[in-house]
Image (cartoon, helix red, strand yellow):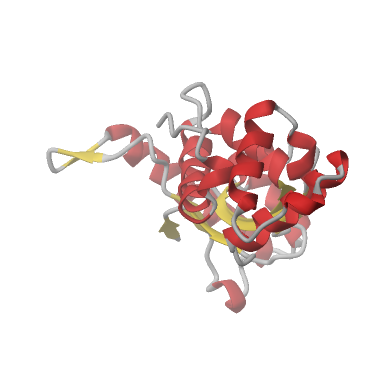
Amino acid sequence: MKIIKPSIEVLDILDQTVILKRLELVGRTCYKSEDKITDTSCVEFVRKIIKSGHHAIVEHYNIAVKVICDRGVTHEIVRHRISSYAQESTRYCNYGSGKFGNEITVIDPCFWRISNFQVDSKMILWRQAMENAEKIYLLLIEHGATPQEARSVLPNSLKTEIIMTMNLREWRHFLTLRTSKAAHPQMREIANMILSEFKSKLPVIFEDISNEN
């Protein structure tokens, strides 16, 4: 059994200038003010658009992000309807095969950690549960169960990969909700990774969303 940390990968090139110029062109169509476009006007224009609440304009650009997390988190992710998803399938992926090292991979839960050189007892119990799930899953496969049958014993902590594509407006909505302290800790962990990356590359679009972690 492998235990890994969650991670994210932005699949699109985040060139802020290119994106802002696209959004400015789209937005100025509403006002027929294309004649006011300059080499630098896009920054202030998009900033004002966002501040004014005219967020329909930022729907005109999509970003795809690959997320590696546990399946419990993806159950929450896919509740965001204005998005497209492609996810690793436990129906077809046979973790008892050599392709997957004949083992399952699970995500390290961020809420149980080693402190003062002592392992949280809850972490020990969690690891035992994961090992038991892996053992039974592999036995089911060995006894002829198909992956879609054997998956019934797999835990929420199972590692999965999901690609999520959202327009910028939905990303803003997603990140506002999912970086909140009210969000699940593992969801917030992922959302803060994405927000940090977006703020680094696209500050004009995401600068008003705070990391509440």
